[in-house]
Image (cartoon, rainbow, N blue to C red):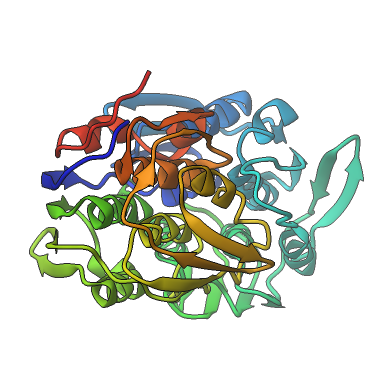
Length: 410
C-alpha cells in the first residue's frame, strides 16, 4: 500500500466477528436448524465452522447467511488443531456442558498479545456444578446437570460472561452473574438466547439474572454490525482526510470512541442507517485509556495509536486490559513514528508523515493498524503475516481501495 489522499464514499459495516462466533457456539444449545444472517466471510468464522463440523454439526453457508443444523448427538470434543488457531473456541465449553454434560476442549490459542487466562471461565462453571480436570493439554469437563448459582466475576471478562450465560440458560434454577461484561456482543448473545426461549433479565447491565429452562428452540437471527470494523474505517479516515459514510454503523455501540475522535477534530453525524464522518485537516493528539465497556475498547487502541502517529501534538496511551498489547509499536517506529513505551503506557508524538517500510502483523487488530499507518506513509508499506487481518476482516483492502485508498492484497 501507499500513502493515500482523501477518502470519499460509502462503506458497509459487516456483521460483528466477536458476536457471530459466539452465536455459532450458542447454536449447540438447541437441536435443529438455526440460521444466522449478516455473518462476515472471515477466517475465524471458517475455523468455528470447522470446529462445529468436527462435533457432527452440519453447516451450510450462502452469502452472509449460515445455516447450522445441530443433531441430537454431538461429539463434545474441540481438538487442538482447531482451538490453537482461534481463542474464541473456548466458548463451546459452556454450551456443551449445559446441553450434554461433557466437554473436552484443548487449551486455547489465538492472538499473540499476552496472557489471557481462562481461570474465570472454569471457576464460574464450577460454581454451577461442573467438574474439570486437565490432561495432555486438554480441559475435560463434566456435569450431571448444571445448577444455578450466584457468580461474581473478579473482572468483567467478556469470554467468561459468555460461557456462563450460555451454560446457565439450560441450568436448573436461577443463576446470577455479578460484574458481568456489558459489551454490545454480550447483549447480542443474550438477545439471541432469549429469542430461543431463554429467560434472561438485566441485559446490558453488569448484573444478569438467568432462569434456566429445559429446552431452547432454533431460530433465525441477524448479527449486529461490527463496531471494530467501523472503528478501523474511521481511523483510516483520520489519517487520510476526506468524507465517509458508514452504512450500518451503530453509534450507540461506539459512544466513547466517537467522543474521542470528535475531541481529535473529526466531524461526525448520525443518520437513519449509519454514520457520516468528515476530516478537513490534520487532527490533534489526545490521551487514550482502554477500559471495559462502555469505556474505550482495547480493540480500538491500535488504530488510535496509528492515528496519533500523524496527529498534531503528543498523546498518552494507557492499556488497562491486556498487558502485552503494545508489540505493534516497534513496527510503527520502523515507519518513522515517535513512540516511547513503558509497561502499560506509551507516549505518541505526532509527525507529519510516516515512511513506508516492510512491517509484520502480530495479531488481527495490529495488522489493521499497520494498514492505517501505511495510508499515512510516504512510499510503499508491505505487511507480512497479513493472514491475521483475514481472521477479522472481509476484504479490508478491497473495501478501502473502493473509497480511494492505495492498498492491495498480494
